Length: 257
Ligand SMILES: NC(=O)c1ccc[n+]([C@@H]2O[C@H](COP(=O)([O-])OP(=O)(O)OC[C@H]3O[C@@H](n4cnc5c(N)ncnc54)[C@H](OP(=O)(O)O)[C@@H]3O)[C@@H](O)[C@H]2O)c1
Image (cartoon, rainbow, N blue to C red; front, side):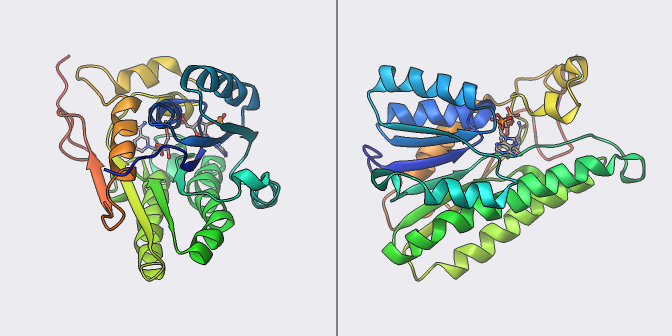
């Protein structure tokens, strides 16, 4: 197992769910963390907590991954001691709506494509050049089972996660001679803020997604992230699908209600 002590890990979308759990799990491993999301007040709160609890270095900043200039400026203006990034975790992402395509709101399509595909590309592009130069680095994308199996009422979310899967595979080939690992962790149902965002704040609909079975917790995915990040340098976990035990595919979930 490789130690993460003192490694610089850049994580997007840390104010909730999987990203937030990753912050705590990686802090526990002694990594130094560059943490970001749109809600800067929450990013700062998390930074203060982990600094005092784990005695690690933390660089909190505001970042909307949909804004290419903001992404480029944020990475360019990193202080010298934070410029060399060892691991990038592309976690920021979202779903909007669960409707038949012909009944869906196209505004949500823009948000999903801008965040899940273009945002991931912008952040990757801003960081990968220094990894290529150094011939060292690891990028871990948080994909989804939706990137393997399209399901009804999820055309654009599934398309966005299929895109993440394709980008992950192509990029892995692009950098296989550069000693850079490209991994994807693809969860099934994880209980986070995801469903509340997807249903535009409707808590009843969001809660129903996780009823009748034990969903994954965001800590379960953070545990997978730590596993993937701590393999020996010559080992790349290319893809890891993680389901709750009651889930067998993107559409098969055993619920006891
Ligand atoms: N929950 C699941 O069942 C599940 C399953 C498979 C895959 N995933 C994937 O896991 C990842 C994390 O989702 P989650 O379940 O943890 O959801 P979540 O609890 O809603 O957290 C999403 C995080 O992403 C951030 N974010 C959203 N849009 C952003 C943007 N434009 N720029 C920067 N940060 C942004 C949010 O922070 P701010 O609002 O503060 O910006 C928040 O911290 C996503 O890629 C999602 O697709 C989730």
